[in-house]
Amino acid sequence: MRASVTTIEPNGHFCSDCAVRGFAVCSSLDPAELREFEHLGCRVHFATGETVFSEEDIATSFYNLLEGVMRLYKLLPDGRRQIVGFALPGDFLGMNISGRHNFSADAIGAVTVCQFAKAPFGRFIEDRPHLLRRINELAIRELSQARDHMVLLGRRSADEKVATFLLGWRERLFSLKGSSNMVPLPMSRQDIADYLGLTIETVSRTFTKLERHGAIEIVHGGIGLRDRARVEALVAA
Amino acid sequence: MRASVTTIEPNGHFCSDCAVRGFAVCSSLDPAELREFEHLGCRVHFATGETVFSEEDIATSFYNLLEGVMRLYKLLPDGRRQIVGFALPGDFLGMNISGRHNFSADAIGAVTVCQFAKAPFGRFIEDRPHLLRRINELAIRELSQARDHMVLLGRRSADEKVATFLLGWRERLFSLKGSSNMVPLPMSRQDIADYLGLTIETVSRTFTKLERHGAIEIVHGGIGLRDRARVEALVAA
DNA sequence: CGTAAAATTGATATTTCTCAATGAGAGTGG
DNA sequence: CCACTCTCATTGAGAAATATCAATTTTACG
Image 1 (tube, rainbow over the protein chains, first blue to last red):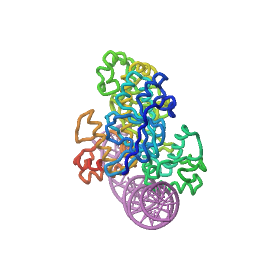
Image 2 (cartoon, chains in turn brown, green, yellow, orange):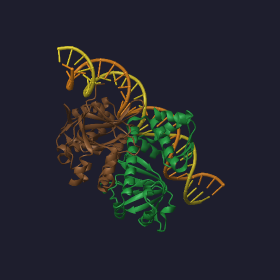
Image 3 (cartoon, helix red, strand yellow):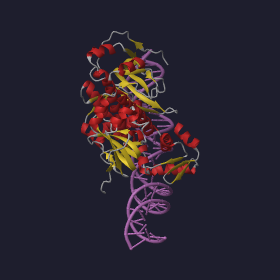
Image 4 (cartoon, chains in turn cyan, blue, purple, orange):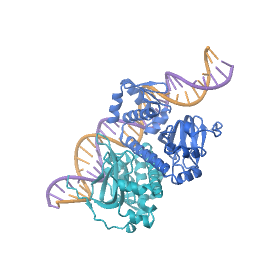
């Protein structure tokens, strides 16, 4: 365990310059509101592997992911892990009803979040129903994704899981960085396995199998799509 | 395929008499609002096996389940089914962002819903942020349940899945009908299998195995808990 | 460079599924 | 009221998918 390298930037950032302004929660705010909102959030950096919050922690903040990728996961008492999602810039974390987080969140690579203390954020929402509507919209979208993932976990084969993950991840990156046949995979094989309900060996074998069949190319830090139709066929199955 | 036996009751119901008043969405409404709200909803009955709405249907209504149990599910193109949840009285259905339902819903046994047309319901919410907050609360609770279910689907053994389902279902019924060692199971074995990501044979075998070990008793229409500690041990695993 | 972590590969074990047969309840019509 | 039939549930035997255990190989990092 090394010393925490979390750093909190001094204030002085402007929402209007924010990379995720446009598609994050705050997209529902008008310029005047934004100036007020600006004072609520605080940029915080996390280094590779650091935990931003843990399941069962009292939830004291909301987080708006600005840069980097996070893994969101739950652990069983015996250590089995299920990754319930990966967070990308623009994602809003920390919603809960019990007052505690219901999953843990780690940085995969360096991460920057915009952190809001719960109470002032709650007061800010209070008289801004459009922001609440936006948050609700995000929650419902996540719910829909969660249900899709249940189908994958409960009813799909390893090949289908891996193919679906690849194209789904590519699709999410698409809205951030544009489309490409190169799919960067910042997370480890173990992360992918824990996301898909498989073992690391099965994920690895499935990648090599797809590569042997000419569907993909395993490159450093990601996957190249060589025959997308083939991968899509597995997803459509 | 038999003729639909859906029946729509003439109006004239009072929210104040409603069985789910107290814990449904409408619990956030005050008596005056309730009288206005009363005119928006319409009771509709569905018979066993009928489909209330289908995935990909344009979502024209919201539903508040008043009586009965529903299965909520998604299908893969080749017919594989994943049940993403069971709905009980008080559950609110129909939230979406795409304008289409993202799962299908069937009646398991006779069902009564309180149906709201989307547009008037939307207008009613418009200037009632507390109702929106209530809806958001329900969405976040569902999201948390969905994540728990992902862990079950991705990381638990058949025994653990069945045990977790039994105690979870019992817990949900508890808040409606009080506790008991008898756990009624209105859904079929196939439904349970499709909820747990198993086959019907595995569910059946797991039940008999638990019965042989003295943990449960298989009775008609449900399960009796004979050694709850034993079942709980599987869940805690 | 050297060491540790991550990924791949192979051999084998285990779980769960598939296919097939049997059994039990519920409703139906004689 | 009783066979009959249909659906649903259970059980068994064997197959298939994925997990486990173990050994390399590759990559990252000090």
